[in-house]
Length: 559
Image (cartoon, rainbow, N blue to C red):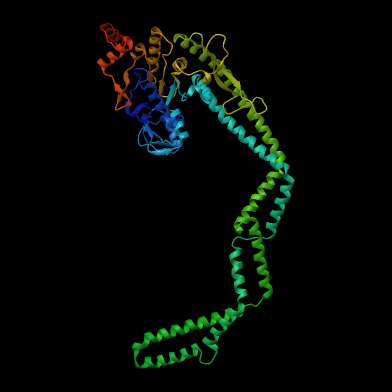
């Protein structure tokens, strides 16, 4: 529901704040006061196109802000969630700023969004009927949704959508299989060669690390032997070796201990050092015996490393990646080898799936035909009530076609819906969107909305110039229709007829004034007595009489 609209520097409006209520809101005032300008500003906040000449003379930019209560608007709440737009509560604040250069800045709850996203949000909030483009009933893509919703066919359509999605997945699989078949032999030869090359290498996980270590040892065997031999000589073999000197130290410590037992702990350390160095000596001797000078083996290991590097450059960054790629190729070979069998199975599954979804789609088509006839009949009666008995509404179910013109199944069934109108007897039916906008169009929309009131998901409806070309008795009928519609929707209506305005629950008066050589649009919420005077003005002109005042009070009393 629209709660508040704020407009700055838009056309005649310098700064205007309007509060709206639930139910039926009406805007009245003299011609040219700015009523339709207000509706135009609301269209901008809903994503309609804008021209820079709308900016008030002398202003740097214009801005429109609108506050909505969206607690019950499930389609919009879902859309916001899908777009990652967070809400602290159920209040939605839309803002749009337009610069003289034509740049737009759009925000929802202080989060920047695109103009396209603003339009998508607006489509869930408001329907504008009159000289505006923001009308869901004029959007071809929405007309099928409206028809299916009216007929309670959305569950059937959802089932078809799910079945169609499964069918398309099977068709894509078959398309991919057929594509591979064209080059199947080539890929089989290539994949088999690659698998053989990898298998023949007998790769082992972790092999690279061991290979690097072995190459390092063999490449440095001479240096290792020299280092180990020197250490062994210094420790044991050469004259004055570390062990022989430590043995002399040990003997001295033992002699010293016979004199002073306090030195025993130090003697034990020397003994322990002797044991440790003897162990080092034994280890060095064994290590020295294992050192191998083998240039042939080194060449073999280097060649193996180069082989692995070649495979890595072709199949993966590591041996693990190469082996993973081998598994992938093996599966692909198996898939290609059994392609004919898979193709036959997929073709059979597709035929079965298509048969089932076509059966459901044909049933939906029959249901749509009945629903279209019912909607046409009920809308025609509404249009008669609204003084448009000669207008003919036809809902055309147009078969979906592919690029060659052949019938085509889609996720929504076998056809699309198009709302057609013949404004006068003898005139051809034409799309609803091509009917001239204005009062007649607004009444057509009012008739459709009255029929669709129980299923229409858009909470706020706005009717501009709905009273063009009608008389007082018809104005009262229109007022009653709008009041009934306001039982399920919030309605905002611009009218010059007191018979319509009298049905409203919230009456807003729009006026303009000139101050310091500038024109300003003003708006006032009318209390009871002020409202009587406004209705009396609408009935009899600027000069209020006892008769017009009495008539105005009767209008309100009878509503």
